Image: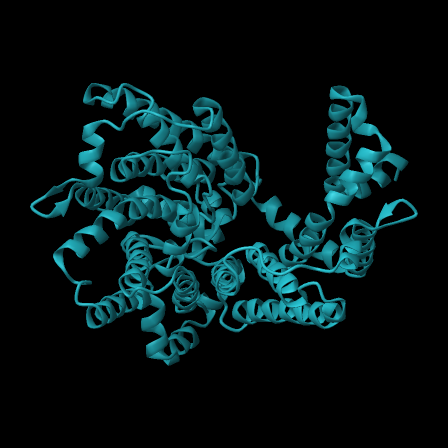
Length: 567
């Protein structure tokens, strides 16, 4: 083996690190080209110091991602521990050590709770940490609605102190990174084994589709217990691996017996959990508050459910093919800004719709191309498009959007016909159309196959990349439509219309039975999940509970509802 050939595996193994080094070098070169002060010693030390907090959080996030998870609760935990630290110390140096130990213990407890929910209840890490983030945010607001207490001056040494010219906090972060890196290298053999396994699986997709006829045996017609709202009516169930197929072929009686032996209650909860939770919430609301079931409140609820329901339907398509779309809220805000960029009359409706449709199609195609063709993580791809849309929006509006929403959009967003909101009628039409597409069409069958097992879908001759791109296109177009409806409902448009809908739509899908692992989901479940979120928010408002309790209840409902589908 030549020297170059021998070095190639090492270069390939460290390709990710090399890309980061090249990117950092490019950033420094760009900064040096802009100003001579960028590479000055003082500025470099300042950047080194400012990166401490982000480096520590990124280090913990890296460990979570390496285990197949993610932690969205870190921001709320930082806010809570900061308030507790300053409030409990309150300038007393004698309290520093006990408070620091208590805060570290609190962080450990939160980490154990997250891990326990993920491991024991088998709830997806995204939902667990998102729910925990809401709970911690509510707890922070309970403790302090604003700045509280103060820390001793010597406590600032960790943040601003220097030893031999180097920032103390940043140096500690670097030492921790080195220790964690050495610890991870001990498992290098296991990581190489996993990489070889992935390469074998990946290489299967490059063989001609006419070969491996035995893979067609891994596709089964849905039996009675595989039907339901989360599968295609005439679709196929795809096993996760060939071993599953062999097991099902050789031991059908044992498989049937194990399925029959599973607890009936758990089976019902896993299928129809959200359809049990939603009526319970409605009954509780009606029992506690007489105004909850009033015609006015029900009409208001329907007005609020429609935009989220439309976005959740698009998110369902993406999640079934193992993706996520974090750009939906930014697409909604962009559509709302476009709606106010004209004269504000009904004569401009056609131009507005065309502009929003064109923008939505471009965003959907970019997301789908990055995920399906370039192999970018859906989280990163849609996060990038979300930031790009925000930048374009702020550049267009100069930070202060102005103009009026056409009266037709106001009618569709907040108008009613015989007491029924127009946007609810639009939602019903959208649900009917896309329910047929997902559960009664050949395209919907391909979506479930690609989400269940992309390799098997490829071997069956399905253009998996085209299916994935189409799902992102649907999600982006529905987000644009929801943005127009929401702009009519709100009446006044700013750059943050629809903020939070990206996470709310994901939560609505998950508690509605859509799997984050792909291959399972339904339009009805996603719509019920959106209704559950809005009903819970409406109830805590009617009960007169403070905002802190509203946020905590939202987080608890989120985790509890998702736990019904775990396992």
